[in-house]
Length: 420
Image (tube, rainbow, N blue to C red):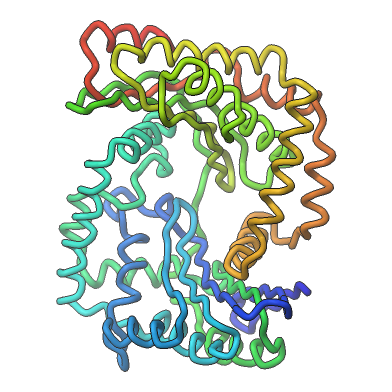
């Protein structure tokens, strides 16, 4: 059973009771991510996420780790371009202890100077790790290409320079500015006593007030850019990203876009996987995915291949994209993909953690809860004509962006640049 309550200070509490489960997951979502940082603050959202686990007034970082381990639970956090999330998953009988721990981290983290200095090195190693992973790196370079100078183009981890020079007060000022109660969502899914939970949440999270410096997130849509970016690097493969315009999260055509992506490269039965890997053996890894933001989105195709096959792989990708823009998809592809999507959706929502994620995203994106039955009905309602229209809109000629990373010769670099 779903319920939404707005606490006295404006924090939204969305819950879903699932009595058949023995677990419960609590998520604290802040509607602020890397796109809300200024260039000088690049990486602050992610760094703050790290610092919440580095000790409070009454618990050390070691105490926090041991306490959650003693409960047999999981506590973690993640940062995206639009949100920062802290969550804890435990057995239902341990919910009071988990809420006490989460509340302590959120309200009483110390942000100790020594811990900040140490964590800078950890985050800098994380940035270096991305630089050493070509699949991650090419996608980061590609985001920079398609988003241009927009804040969405910047890496979530930030830049070495901004992390190295950040100070404790910078982080506290950022929290005061962006962590407004009205921009926070508490999402709880699993087995719990609703009245007891609401009383606890009102006491622990409902009392926080906005700082005098707090302000609303100032966001504006990004123009998705076409173009080519090629970077040489001594690798065994060339890593490629091909990008096109997508749609915002929550858009009325989102299920048609999901179908389009799945047929293109979102599954092992997709056209690109079958054409590039299965029929021709040109790549081990090739796939496509959607990135949806509050005010826009992208479609990205990734492939890793031998240097001598780069032009051939790009030509096959371009051919499939043009084919879908011109002819849409076949009826049997639509039928198969809709059944696949419904099955994946139902399986993905079998845990309290996934239900918690869905509750929060629904609230942040649309402000309303969507039931599983409504989602299944929306998938069933997708038609060939709708998919064809979305394909024409997203896969328009001349809108493709290409990013290449690896051992490319000068001739290949010229050829890739000419393929856009």
